[in-house]
Amino acid sequence: MIRRMAVLRTLLLGALLLAASIRAHGAPHECAIEYRFTARWDEQPRRFQVDVLFDAGKRTSTGLRIADQWGPVRDFGRAIRGVRPIAPSAVVSEGPDRGKAWTVDHPAGGRVHVRYELLNDVANVDADTPLSHLDFYRTMLGAAWFQFYGHGALLIPEEIDTEKPLSVCITFPGLPTQWAFASSHGEGRRGATIEIRARTSLHKLESSLFVGGDFRMYRRPVDGGKLVVALRGRWPFDDAKFVDTTAALVRVHREFWSDRIPYYLISLIPNRVRRGETGGTGLYHAFAMHAGHDFTVPGPAFDHLIGHEDVHTWIPHRLGTTGDDEARQYWFSEGFTDYLAHRLLVTAGVWTLGDYAKYVDARILLYEHSPVRNATNAALARDFWKSPLAERMPYVRGELLGLRWARALAARGESLQDALRSLLLPGEAAEDDGRNRADRLAARRLVSALRVRLGASVDRDIADYVEEGRTIPFTEDFLGPCFIGTAVPGPAFELGFDASTLQSHIATGVVPGSAAERAGLREGMRLAFFRIDWRIDREVDLRVVDGDRMREVKYLPRGERQVETYRYEPLPDAAQKPACRRWIEAR
Image 1 (tube, rainbow, N blue to C red):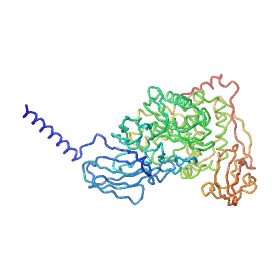
Image 2 (cartoon, rainbow, N blue to C red):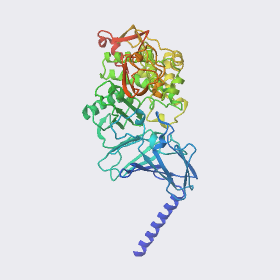
Image 3 (cartoon, one colour):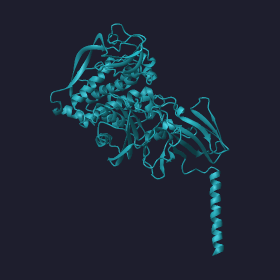
Image 4 (cartoon, rainbow, N blue to C red):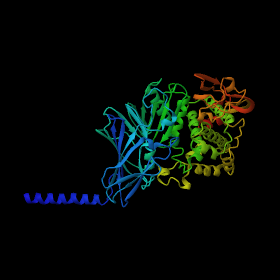
């Protein structure tokens, strides 16, 4: 018996040595790539110590990179410090594009292990001062909370195909046990260490949201899946009202697409702005938002923000991809997202027909009076993250083009909603089957589908109203059978100074006799603050430095020149008319 046990021990030891030998020679690890985010909140500066591990394969050198750009941010590398190898046999060197790329020289086979520090990247993360929309895209590590995205936090091995699904392990050791946690890939298995295991691509991992700390977490069932809502800060509404109203609108979208999503995360943080500032970004199985003190539920900002960001789940991501030149496709990915989000608000009964007409009137006003209305698509793409005027135009142009095509399809007894839904790809095939394949580009797939229905006019519209920037024409029946439009004259939008002022913060090109000059703006004044809604019926609000004092400059941006535009209103008893009912319920 003793001898038999000794033989078993020998066999077991041999098996362990064989397994170790196989591992040393590069057998696949159960986690193709691992990220460990060890919380160092009790040290200064507070940070995550991040370990990234992956198999070397036959390589002796691997490149690591942080996202070159995402949203308006181009310098994510400034939050990354101390990139270094753990194994003594490996060496890390920084590339010529400092702070964005590194090279790891290592032995072939075995496991590559690199460590770095992820620091807070927003100076006023815990202050009472306003959080800018740009900073919202950065890594935020507060005293009692964190929010970051894969784009700004993950060093990605360049030799691994970013589109190929692989086994990923993400752990968060060291977080306080009372802290909440959620991510695009779930809430993880809780314990001393939060553990997430997923089969996903590095592309989706980069487009992931991670939140934790003093967030208040709520969960709601939505069509067989789970919606998680993460809130922090104080709001002028009850948490339950926000969560339940959000879940109701999300259900409308799931029903429209007949699409089940097992898990989805929505986060909301305060931006500490008093009035009128909201923003958000769509991510993989998540979207993140920020809002000011006046954010109400329900309310126009809520309706638009929740509607828009949730519809991004499908447009463009479940209809195809955006390709390399994404900014040239914003007329579709942003404009058609707006089109469908607002139509579904009417279908869901959140908006009345009057609400919808009022909203479209405001969009037309913005379009008609915008100085970049006739800019080419290439120019808007170039200036998208540089100019608020260029940033807004693809949304407006795309939605108005959607309305134009919706009217043409309705005349044939069809609907744009049905055309969009026909593009839905099964599962997540759009992401997993080649990001840049020409036949997977979402905008191209839409144009092909509409060309079958409407003929060559679709291509002419793209060339004229998107690429060349010609003015989209309006008619009395532009909004469809529920509405009537009336041509009315009114003053042209006039900002009263050159838009470059918003970048230089020095007033230039002040127009003599303009409303801006009459309100007190003068050439050369320093601009300390501005709020501009780019609407002729909303005041421009400036704070300027005049000598040794701060002055407030407010005015309506109306010029002397008159222009003609359309205003829309519902027809009498519109909702009772069969054609209008079909418009409201169009699927």
